[in-house]
Amino acid sequence: MLKKDARTVAAQQVARLESAMCLRRRWSPENFQLFLVEHPLVRHLTRRLIWGVYSAENQLLACFRVAEDNSYSTADDDLFTLPEGDISIGIPHVLEISPTDAAAFGQLFADYELLPPFRQLDRNSYALTEAERNASELTRWAGRKCPSGRVMGLANKGWMRGEPTCAGRWLDRLDDQTSGPLVVNHGNR
Image 1: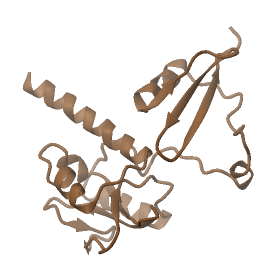
Image 2: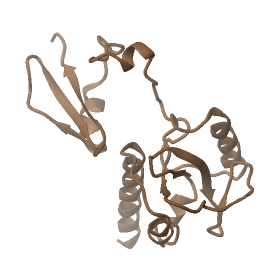
Image 3: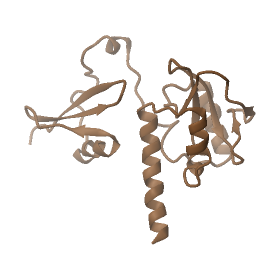
């Protein structure tokens, strides 16, 4: 019974950390150390992720990982010390990490045989084109087909289902910085 409970808690923590990455959740250095690095259950997950130091303006300043001895290291496996000042710690999305850092951390994780608890570096991501940045609607994926189970599975990742609309459903992902509906048309039957 205890093993089953531990697996359930671990799965919940993995989902929580992945959501923290997607929602750009940040921790103070003190809370990061206390609630993540030193936590008896979560510390094993923190060692398998890339972490970022963010400025007060929420800009990524540097990336690091948590080593087995709870020290911090760079992608080159050099000792890393958190900078002084008004900073926060978060899990950077692959779109925030430079290609050089992503490759170096990927190699470091491979060398140490560290398997991330969720897709961080190899996550499917799609940067907006300049035209899409200025558009009010994204049409790149219009007409694409996707199994309904995958769409409904978005509810497990923080999306909220809306009421059916004209031949479709909408889902909305809300956080403190962004929101955007995803309209899904069930197509012809």
